[in-house]
Length: 255
Image (cartoon, rainbow, N blue to C red; front, top):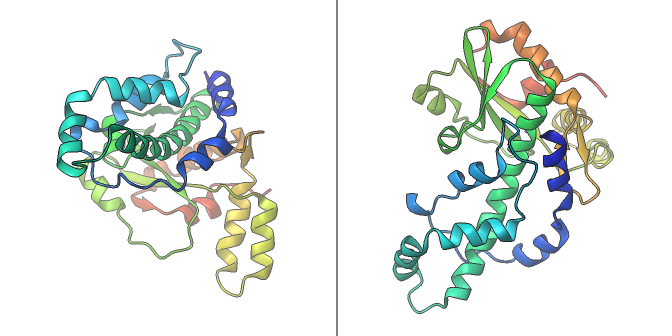
């Protein structure tokens, strides 16, 4: 399944999608439960049992999502876009769901890579995802939540404990992910007047990622192997939120 999913990711015309959708942010309202795309994304793209070698392109996915939800879409349009054309709202939703899909596809690649390379059991569901848990891993008698953490240098409030109180997870592990290459990050680290250490950690992380020919960034086997070893050695002592920088320092090996 990993190879089939990577073939799908490589087939995406990211440049055209970015050109079409980047400037469009016309549908930013909270979507009602009936329009939540997560169940459909999991249904079409998360196949942990390997029962398909085909994944629909984004246009096919969106068409099916749209056709299944005509009644709640009508209510949503009447509430927020009275007087606007269906074409206007549809394009706004396309752009929004595309951004969501790219994020979810990144999560799924981590999960497929984990299942192909690791022994510890991983589970991912849209219900967990809706609560901020991208996946959960069974390590010893403990459940470790996983949350993909995209590169940022902003100070952020830690929300891990909110998720941990909701479910029976012993810890929530932030899995750092960046779209930048090691070379780009190294140049930034050399020029940095502040936060040089953070850039150096992202350089380390980037060495465990790989860029497909179309630009989609995926996880190398070394990434999930290092994380699994870290969990095998430390699962019984982990608790609360395990931030991305601790993961980079203590779990990932150097380049």
